[in-house]
Length: 170
Image 1 (cartoon, rainbow, N blue to C red):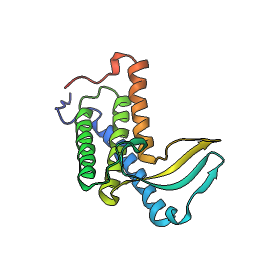
Image 2 (cartoon, helix red, strand yellow):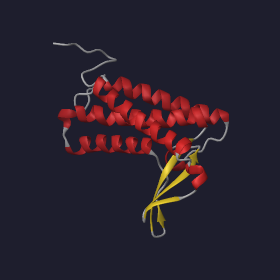
Image 3 (cartoon, helix red, strand yellow):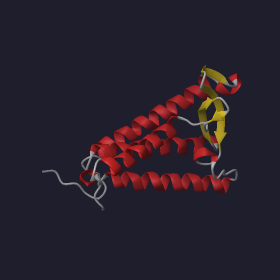
Image 4 (spheres, rainbow, N blue to C red):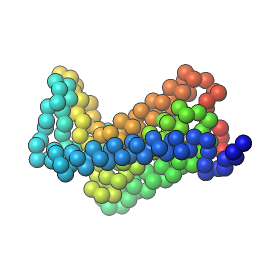
């Protein structure tokens, strides 16, 4: 029987593979939107009656909260994001289900995708704008989708799948 330690567990590789997939999808899409499609030059592009592609630089966190326009503020956000990603990666060693590992992996990949934006561009690149009539949702990117999907996965497991799959405490 294989033994696992505090930094590597049964589902670590699975969770990190999903993190890498989410990260790669996010960064490839952002590169394409910014440098190939040149969304900033095109302005708003209507894809469907309820979906536009736009270029928004978000200097804060989700929903534009806590905008950081100073160098120190940006460094704090980068540092917090990296610490969170490392902590979540270490938590993966204690996962007892693929579902939890997948959820945490998606959060890690999304967090790192947005962190790279902060390092490279000084803000997070967002593109998707959902709207209906006068209601408009916040503008987001693939990394945000991965983070939200991961959080929803953790909540679903916690609420509906019982205690058998909850991660063991380190």
